[in-house]
Amino acid sequence: MELWLRFLKNKTAVAGLVIFSAIVLLAAGAPLFADYHESAISLDVYNRLQPPGSGHILGTDEMGRDIFARVIYGARISLTVGISSVAVALLAGGSLGAISGFYGGKIDNVIMRAMDVFLCLPDVLLALAIIATFGVSKVNLVLSIGLSFSPKFARIVRSAVMGVRGSEYIEAARSIGARDGHIILHHALINCMGPIIVQVTLYVANAILTISGLSFLGLGIQAPTPEWGNMLASGRAFMRDEAYIVIAPGLAIFFTILSLNLLGDGLRDALDPRLKQ
Image (spheres, rainbow, N blue to C red):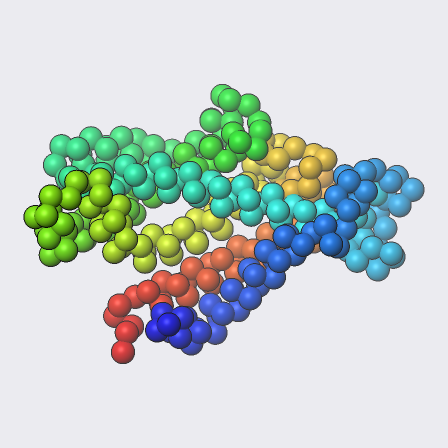
């Protein structure tokens, strides 16, 4: 309750939560607003490039598909892939980071040096390499982005676990014969979830931006499946005269990233023990 009250004092964080909640609700309720196959997928060349307000809230694209329908169904894909990618990164990188931070010594040195090798490569480049190797699909997209983020999560979790591994409750758990795996899961990680939750929020935004970038390059979600990045790619040829084609997906990306960043900043401030009164 105290955490929630501190969060509510941050007006920009509350604004971020409201915006993100609205995006999630639109994505979850997309079938209530438009039919997927008829509005977001099916071609209708007789209604192509219709401006906003002409029977379509945001107009139609170059193939006659309803842009509003494609934006809200695209939100489903972006959010699902983004959250799933961060979950993979947290599971893979977080596990290695927890082991490294808890045991230290040679184990820590080996794991962190391996992570350093992957950190030398930019996230997008590493994701591109994985997709180029295993092919373009939604599953491969999730795995490629998740694995490219894993080294950063390994460092985040390692630092958090190292900060609590010498605590009295850890020693108490050891003294009663608790196994290392139990201590890591039920004592170390549970008591350092604050900074991890904040980073998860921020990296979901990063993952959504990466997904859009890969789709824009043709290596992410493939048309005609609606996704914000491929909507920008297909509409860029018409943006001089029909700018609304790219404005809608562009604003969707902008507000999603903005809301997650505001939410992450608010969580960081609320979870900071130095701000407790």
